[in-house]
Length: 417
Image 1: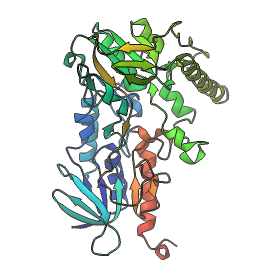
Image 2 (image 1 turned 180 degrees about the vertical axis):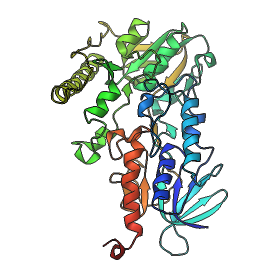
Image 3 (image 1 turned 60 degrees about the vertical axis):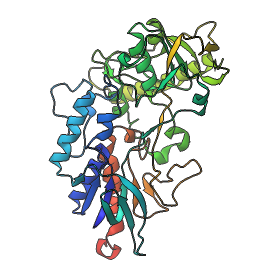
Image 4 (image 1 turned 30 degrees about the vertical axis):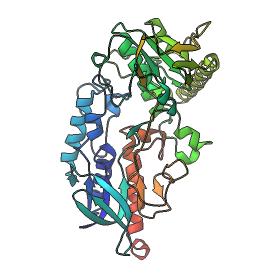
C-alpha cells in the first residue's frame, strides 16, 4: 500500500495535520494504535480537566462553539471534541493499528516504509504525531523504594479511591503534581509533596485568565528560533495550574493551607529513607522571581495596548517556605502507602529506525522538520515551533507551517516557480 504521506497518531495534532493535507489535496492515511484520541481516553485521571479555557480549545477550521467559553473541558468532553473533529474533516484514520517500525524503504526506493500489525505502507513523507507523553519518566531512584510502598504515575492513577488510607508522597510540583497532591489531600490523607524546579502562575490576573494574557501579550506565539536556550526552554516543567470550575489558583501556598507538607526535591533514597534537598527556599524564590517578571511583561503590554475591562496590576504573596523543612522521610514505617511519581513524561519512538536521535534518544529536529530524514516531520512536542505547541490550540499554527513545508518538498521547484 502506498500513499504520499503517513501520519502516525490519531490525536488532535495528527487530525489537524490530516485537515491541512486534505486542504492541499495530498493523499494520506492516519494510523492510530487505539481509538481516536486514545491517550485522552485511557491515560488520564478521572477528575482531570484541561489547563486552558474552552475558548482556546480549537483546531484548524473548528473554533470552540459551546456555551461555556471560560470553563475547562473534562476528559470526556475533550474526547468528544476530537472525535467530532475527526468526523468533520473526514480524516482517513486506521484505528486499532500499531506501528512496529518506521524505516527507509526496503526496496531501495525513495521514501519510507511503515510496518504495522495490519500491513505495510510505503510513503514519500511521514508525520510523527504520536505525542510527547507516551511514557511516564520515573527516575532510577524508584528502584530503592521499599516493597510496602505502592508506586503510581499520573498515567496510571485514576482517583484517591484506588489508594489505601496511608499517607502519600507526591514527587514533582508541576501541574500534575500539585493537582494530585490537592485532590488526595482533600480526602483526608496525609500528603507530602517534594518540590524541585517549578513554574508558578496565577489562574487569573487583573480579572482575566492567565491564558488570555499569554495569548494577548504574545507569549504563546514566541517561536523556537527566538529562544536564548532552546533545550532548557523545552524542558521546563508545566505551570502550576488547574482547570477548576471555580477558577482557583493552585500553588505551594494553597497546598500548605489545606495541610499538604511541602519539602525539597527528592535527592535520593537510602535504606528506605527518602532524602530531600535543603535548597527549597532558593527554588521557591526563583519561581516567584520568574512569575513576577512575567507579570511585569503583562503590565507593560497592557499599558501600551490598553485592553478593555482589566483590573489594576497586582502581585501575589511569596511562597511561604517552612522555617525548618523536613529533610528525611522514613518509607519503611508504614506511614507512607503510595508514591506518586509526577516527574514528567517522555515520548516513545522505539519503533523509529532512522538515524535521527541524539544521545538521549530524542529526535533531532528544527521546528518539527527532521532534516536528517527528509520528508519526516514531528508534531506535538513542547515548544516544537512556538510556546503554544504543546497545547491543543498550538496545532493550528504548527500544522499550517509543517504542511506547507511538506508540500513544497513534494512538488518540483519548477512547478512552484
